[in-house]
Amino acid sequence: MTADEGKRRAAERSLDFVENGMTLGLGTGSTAAHMVALLGARVRDGLDVRGVPTSEATRRLAEENGVPLTDLATVSRLDLTIDGADEFNPDLNLIKGGGGALLREKIVASLSDRMIVIADPSKKVARLGAFALPVEVVPFAAAALKPRLERFGCTATLRSRDGAPFVTDEGNHILDCAFGTIADPPALAAEIGAIPGVVEHGLFIGMAERAVIGGADGIEEILAPGTER
Ligand code: 5RP
Image (cartoon, rainbow, N blue to C red; front, top):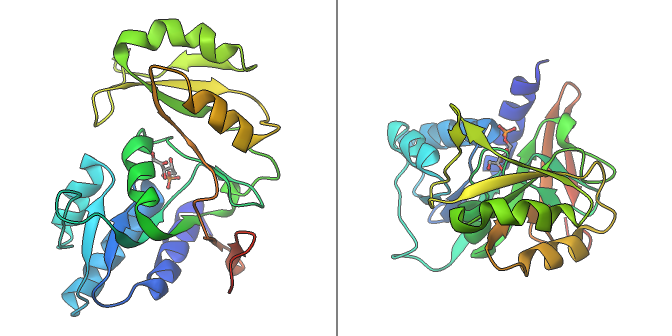
């Protein structure tokens, strides 16, 4: 089984948690894309849901698949967000933002009653940090924030696309901070989040309640500490 088949399997399982009438946060990335496509098929079969997309890419995908959309001007609470991750540890703390959508992803997840992560097995790690932590910064401060972030023990690289700085859906830049391992994710999240000019970072601490992992042997599910099955 390929990683992509595992992602699709996880996406399919996550839809078991979707109920009629729900407002859903629609994640970004290749795993979330499977979920949006499968959700579109359920909508065509009569499922009544509304989605808040976490990126312009997901908005387009949802529209193509016929998933009805709403926005944060219309709703201020969501029932459930389903999204991918770049890494998650046994506490279900996450690194996200590989696709550059971490700001909208975190806002939408924070407004949701529940968040389910969908992934292939490669995303499950004992300790976070092998994946470089994306930190979204205002363009004005990006150059100066590189050495500021490196004081935490990482190497920070300005993300680029086609030779120019990558620009997020909210008009910001991203510094990818390679740590190797992150000893204390909650402490690092608090420290980086407090730096002026940092808009948001990709550490999602205590937000996900369940990870659904699709692999060759079927589905594995991990619950965050304190979550009831
Ligand atoms: C986008 C994200 C994605 O969820 C993350 O990068 C995982 O992507 P994929 O499902 O393609 O592996 O955080 O900002």
